[in-house]
Amino acid sequence: MAQHSLTKDGLGEAAVDRIIDALEAAGAQFCAESFRRDALSSLDQLELKDRVRHLITVMSVHLPTSFPETAEILSDLKDHWPEPDQDHQYYFAAWPIVDYVAKYGLNHPKIALPLLRHLTPLFTAEFAIRPFLEVHSEETYSQLLMWCLDSNEHVRRLASEGMRPRLPWGKQLPQYIKNPTPVISLLENLKDDPSDYVRRSVANNLNDISKDHPELVIQTCKSWQADKVTARDWIIRHATRTLIKEGHPKVFSLLGYTRKPKLCVQPPNLSSHHLMLGEPLGMNVKITSDSAEKQYLVLDYAVHYIKANGQSSAKVFKWKNLRLKPGQSVNLEKTHPFRKVTTRRHYPGIHKIELLINGKHASESSFELHIP
Image (cartoon, rainbow, N blue to C red; front, side):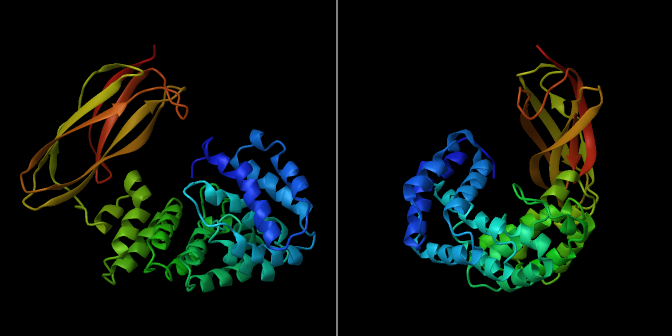
């Protein structure tokens, strides 16, 4: 998820009213006007995750201090939650309700874990489950294994998403970054899940693991391939996307690409060798097969940006997947923008465009970037 300014409006005034109405319908006793006043105070000045924390605090003030009592209210709340409308931000209103369980139910795992399972269809409990994995690791892991068999796809997805070692927006799980074997064991139960929603999470989880344990992920994918279950092919391709981008030598043959392609590759023909920041750079490249067999290729390119210290740093970009017949030639064109962005500061100097085929250097050209 990206934290855009509009996204935080999913936890605005309308969300506060949804929360109040649902809590009251579930039997919570509090002054609605006071809850609303506290909830809306300073809300406009907060970003999305700060709004979640703020509303959790407000709930703690107006709900019973006994977590088991509040848990009964939250369990009934699901039956009174309004049906989804056309607003894509609708689901954010349930986020503080789910994460309330993580903050105030951590010492009550036997109550809190089933409650998270119950609430996750309203808003994913992938963030809320992580403190339980840290504090009550064995009990929580046992629950996740059981949830892999749940009839609800949201619960099965939670089993995978909650254990992602490097979950975006979520707290990292150092124990599984170091040793992801328990995560892999859990994913074995979900690799053939009937839900695309769940299988995408499996792939994303493996992709996370590949950043620290590439060989383990490749070996896992090979073992999944061995059963020749076609539906797993998408998971494997999506799970290895970082390895493809990084050019890991073993991943290309895993995905059916030619292990040692035979090619004649010309250096990229650039539209300019002196480029002003703000102008696009055009690239043209000719690739010819030098093999008597069909060849399957992944074509990427790396821009070697100049840093403040004068050294260069490469960033890889996707270009195209190719199938070349024996002796076939292709001419490919690409435009790369060089403009001011908030995520990168550009520096003048000689930049290099490197062509990568199946993760390996194929050819390169250079140009000089000028800053107005």
